[in-house]
Picture 1: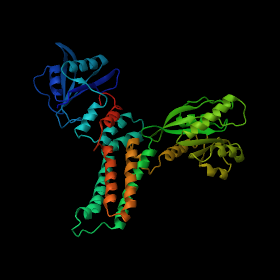
Picture 2: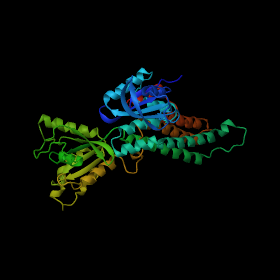
Picture 3: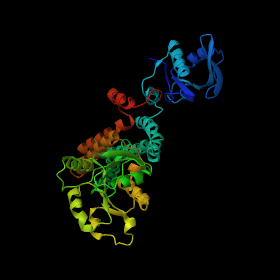
Picture 4: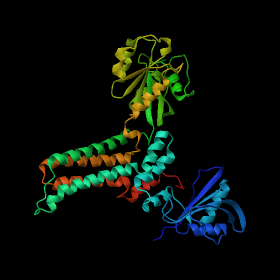
Length: 448
């Protein structure tokens, strides 16, 4: 059954110099021929200047690009109309296409058709949405790598290795009468373990990845240590109110930041003070600790002008459950003072001055590397939570195969290897369900 031709505006809402209307389906070319009153077909993959008509009246003049089936984004016959970016003109063009037999496209339907027509696998299709939504250099680079097939190639290599191992394990089961040497345990264990480590690394990259959601960094510390000033210094703008009066910040405040290509959120919190009967300050204290527990990383801001023993109670309260970076603020007031060695156990220690800016760039680099290490796959691959869950299932089955191989004739080991293979299939769409596709493509904008 032929899919209906779909149409949508492919550019963001609002006025602009240009706007694009996109069609995909077997009637796309015929519909646009009627809109332009042309008898001659459009030359494939060439932008052709044409007048667009609304009945007998000229509506606009634009560029029409025709893509034949098999040579388009969706894999179907497609047309893109670049017109002037008036919302009226673009909406009228869509209405005229609907009057001529097209229907409105659903969110992500052009990309879904590209997947169904094998122009993209499922991980590449998801990458299109991630690339559109990317707000940082790292997010864009990782999504584009996946769109170009970076993750797909890794999965293909894993499939090949699992299939080879399965064939070797099953050889004696399928042909017991033939003299086929079994897979040596040492070789099999080594190969399964190598594969398991690769899969586990990708699963871990997904758990550390902040390409779908911002990394959260909670800024905590004692009252008047300069947390809000340091927040403003890291942002390069005044986001939080700063005052010499202790306790100015009473609640948490979130601010987005680009940490060297990583999308992150800094959370300014109220100063930690236990020796108070003020119910508002006590609630602020509790909220600060909750913010730290919910963050990926804690940035502890300490006043450099105070003696080290002044901070011990605070650091003990914060504990070691969360990775911490300790920023000794106001270092410009005591530039020659020796770094307090007894703070090193709390985490990485860096001297900064929110006032002068000294050390702020280094602090930003430390924050970025703490969330995504420079040599981590999480910084290069857009491994989503869905991918990570599939890799975890694959790693579990490989672990079972590893344990089973030395004590098995091969049958149960092969079952676990095949289960590991099956676990990879949903990542690139080798096996899918309608619910899965609906969930993935509902994230897209209309027109893509």
